[in-house]
Length: 238
Ligand SMILES: Nc1ncnc2c1ncn2[C@@H]1O[C@H](COP(=O)(O)OP(=O)(O)OP(=O)(O)O)[C@@H](O)[C@H]1O
Ligand SMILES: [Mg+2]
Image (tube, protein in one colour):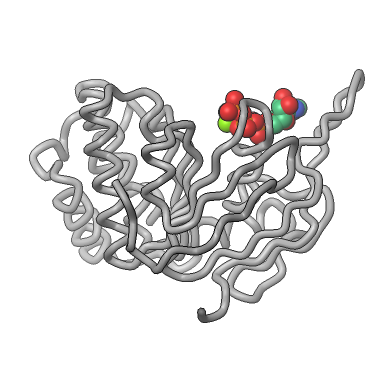
């Protein structure tokens, strides 16, 4: 396989409060390659969301090395991390995290407005519309998120994650707030994106969805417990 998009070695994360220290990650080694679909399972509290936050530069590790496309990012300031995050990473969360005061269109356009080199309005417009069409929501551009169903809101969140052409899409329990019909539809959409070349790393409790990945990781007490053999890209069971 080619070079990894990202490479972690010995990543730890300790949350300290006045009363206690929580060792959320205890030495994670992980490489993700272009085009992979990696799933992460594990019991509640084992560190899955913490790992995803560090992978996506929403948070910084306590120690260890982390490289994105060859650039060391573990020691960056939060501001520098935010710049890289905005250009390289898309997020999809269980709770959609859309802004109810903004229209669907403006929610999707938001990541483009925070770029180091903002793109022209007409180009941004093209990208937003393209992503809206991609998730089958072109007819809902002027709605507010709270006027949509859960499944529709998650599709908008997917469009928002895609609009900046991220190198990596990080997904935390994307179906947790959806019924099985909408959950399956969202997973089908994610699988399609992976088939088209988007690299995915997804946390899920659902073994059916974990099995759609080309590689399944299990996290236990802040460590990866059983890295499994890599399937051929896109050779995924449903
Ligand atoms: N901001 C924080 N401050 C203090 N402790 C935290 C913080 N975030 C997470 N933790 C702790 O770190 C550990 C790992 O949390 P994390 O959210 O990564 O678990 P998880 O595997 O995503 O769990 P779940 O499946 O319930 O979502 C937990 O013990 C949690 O209480
Ligand atoms: Mg979590």
